Image 1: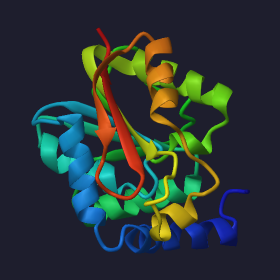
Image 2 (image 1 turned 180 degrees about the horizontal axis):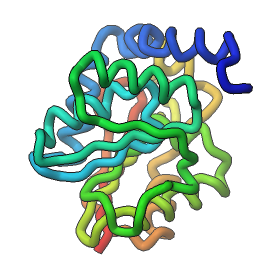
Image 3 (image 1 turned 30 degrees about the vertical axis):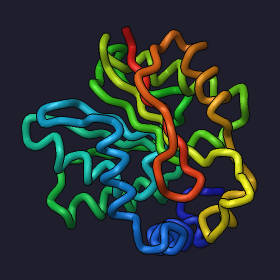
Length: 205
C-alpha cells in the first residue's frame, strides 16, 4: 500500500483499539508480561522488531531508563509515524524507523535484547528464517531474543484474539527450529498466559 494511503492511515489509527479488544482489555498486563519474559533491565539496549504503533517499545524505554536505549522498526510507514507521535506524547526517548525484519539497519552486536512479538506469523516461512538470523546478528554476545507469537489452536482456545489471527500461527516446534537453526541457545519457552500466545527466549552465545 502506498505511503499515506487513507486506508493504511485509518488502519494504523485503529490498531491500538483492535489490540485492546482482542486482549479483552489486558493489553497493559500482556505488555508487562512480555517485558518480564525478556528480562529487560535498566541500562540495556533494546530493539523491537515489528513494533507496530510503538506501545511495547515505549514501555521498554521506561524499564531501561535514561541509561538504556530502545529502537523500534516496522515495515509500515504509517505504523512508525504513529509510534513516533505516541513516543513524543509520552516524552519517551524510544526511536522508530521503517525497516524490514530480514534486513535490519543496525550494526552487528548492537543490542542486549531483541523483541519479536506477534509478528513472525505474518512472514513467509523462508523470510522467517532470514529475520531470525538478522535478529541474532544485531545481538551482542550473551544478548537475548524473545519471540512471542500465536501458537496452534486447541479446542479450549477461542475468543477474539484467536478469531483475528486464524490466518497465521506457529508451533513451539517451529519456533524452536528457527532458534536452533540461527545458532541461538534456548533459555526458556512456554505459554504467555494470554490466549494462544507462546514464547521462546534464547541467547546469542
